[in-house]
Length: 163
Image (cartoon, rainbow, N blue to C red):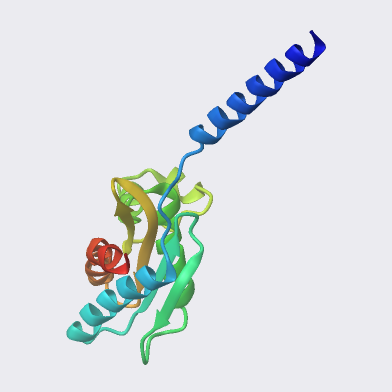
């Protein structure tokens, strides 16, 4: 009887453990290879425009994977670019959303932890999920954003080519 009870408990534990493992989600992550391709697309757009900018690609937690400061770009744009990218990643929306909120009188947006309410940060999505973001800083807000959009637009192709 005791051996039967132990066998049944062991089987239940094994099945329960397998069920728990089956529930763990898998999620795509932004690799260095893909981040470099995204940054290269943004850099190509910036050079085409003659822009002096910082380009930052971050993971979904807002931590930098790639940072490029083009020649003659002001040093202050490094921290601003990181902030724009981090904002787009952790809030899962363009950083311009927060700039617009401030412009429209919602100054409480300035108190959001980790938010840089300046245009130029764009989320990078894969299969409907934010896996990172790109931030660009150094020129006009709209130009920064256009360059970031060019980088983010390259993500799908970069991911496809990385496989």
